[in-house]
Image (cartoon, rainbow, N blue to C red):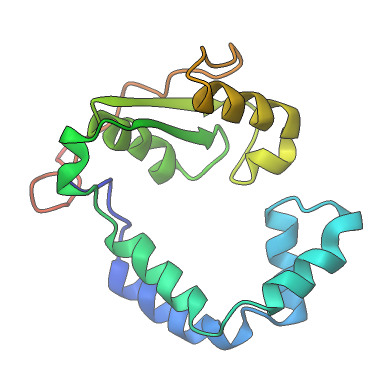
Length: 163
């Protein structure tokens, strides 16, 4: 089973190849830091660490994002899985949460209201609470909500089901 696929994966991979040489440039890193809401006091460390990433890593991450599927063994996994995303995360990610969680017998999906992709930095106290609850097998903080129920599950070919 695939999570909901990225639209136009070939185009995404091509754009990744074109952007790859610029991924560690100052303007690109500053734009990415703004998108991730990196606090100004952490910007220097963020840039330094991002520049230490091996050149092909961004391409491999992009490729993985466009081809990821839930492992066939997920249905027999004894592991607890918590699929979480911020409310302001990309729609595709939010709609994939129940698909991913539903593949695991002990899977669950939640959305964090009021935050985006980098929700762990936007709400660090809540992030710590969520981690502790998941690791200790305790109830999740009440701030987390169920994802929207209007998810269209992918077809067997991995394309979104008509809808």
